[in-house]
Length: 367
Image 1 (cartoon, rainbow, N blue to C red):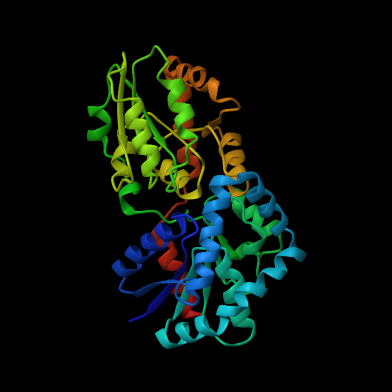
Image 2: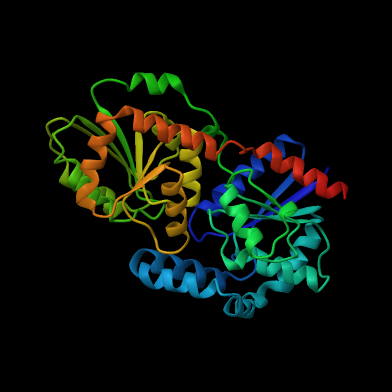
């Protein structure tokens, strides 16, 4: 039986969810699959340092995070990232070789730096696929040692090619997501049609507090709105929203939930989603043909995700939170605009296929 090892780590949940989706698809195609957290599995201390720093900077100092993102996108500076990750080289090489894997897939950009170095040193010698989990390929993704890239759009392909990657190596098969998002449950959609306009509000896995400012505006809207609010793992956000909106509000139906495993169904029940543009959430919305309203971004990759979505008329970026009701009401009053956005989402996701990732792996193994 062929074996694939999928390398990921927990700087945000998107990388882990992409890994889990790939695991399911490869198992269906008779692969032995291992998901390996390359940070925690090789250096628990380094894992805590990096994942903790990411969560703190992304939520508490997003401007500094954005500056760091831009600085490390510079090729010269990016080359110094090998210094901290050099600590785990030998441990990861041993794990890969001991596992007798036939192919490696990385769902985190840092895997490119590490695996490329292992291949150059001839510590490993098997094909390597990198999954780009956002719509712009940061400099950390760039390496000639990568055998193929999986991307979320033709824009990402062009971005990689402009940075020196061969066109034959890039495939816009989509950012891997759970199978539940690959179809639309029309029974749920039809059940929720009626007088209320259904809005899904997502604050990311970390539960960004900024979503509360959007809700504050929406409850002032005189239209009939059903608000489904997903707070992620932020219990404080969930508790504070429940306290604020415990009493009935005229023309509003408000549902507040924490971390959810039924986001697919929630998307089916919604007319639009209001969310930061993380790569995984965007891809899920693309499959669900769910127009996106972007109230804020974590500077860096989400800024580029937002630019792409707006340029393709798949999303609307809010410049001021106070404008959210104007945008919602415009979509309610002009359903043809909503339909056009859905059609554009269809076009953006036309090539998406988890099966193609498996077929690509098979072809690399044959070579």
